[in-house]
Image (cartoon, rainbow, N blue to C red; front, top):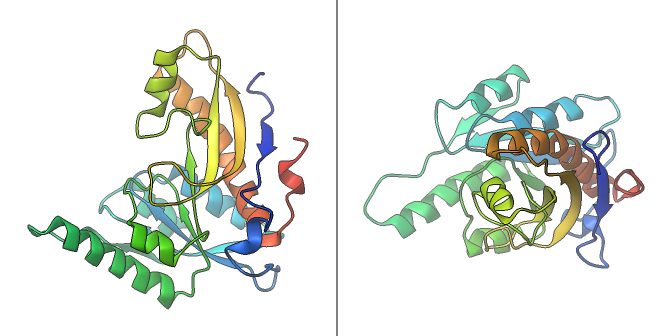
Length: 230
């Protein structure tokens, strides 16, 4: 397989279909209300916002939340006039309470903006089981490997070390584990013999920016046709 045209294969999480978490079919006039959570540069977020700028898109981003201040993603979100908030983890000795307080602050914003789907885009925190349970099948993430292979923060390094010929990216529902949620769709990308972590990451990122908006399209509309036969 070359990296000229993404080869996407859809894996439905269950027979209920992709709309089971959001509970409705979105329309142009009443698009799915999304929040994007970031921790860094926000390149994937920007690709999603650009996709949503199309007149025929069935989902919209109502707010962006970063758990870190001063990151490029904040500037990128503001260029699209999306309300953007920095919600950092509180300081204190009780790390468990700090985590819960942090997630509570995030959730208050999600409720305030009537969010229906949470999109993790380079968000480098593992959400608690309680938070995920309250937003069951309403949180999605993209990971730069073909899960369940190579989970975790160093997927490209691990792929190269394993010497495999094919990697890619996976969009999945989020559970309380590390990249263990139900798979929605995957895109395969060739690993070149001279790839390093940087070159492989850059090639796969191009496909991430294609696949993720298409999956959110499918969630919003219940129509998976754009993910089939590509």
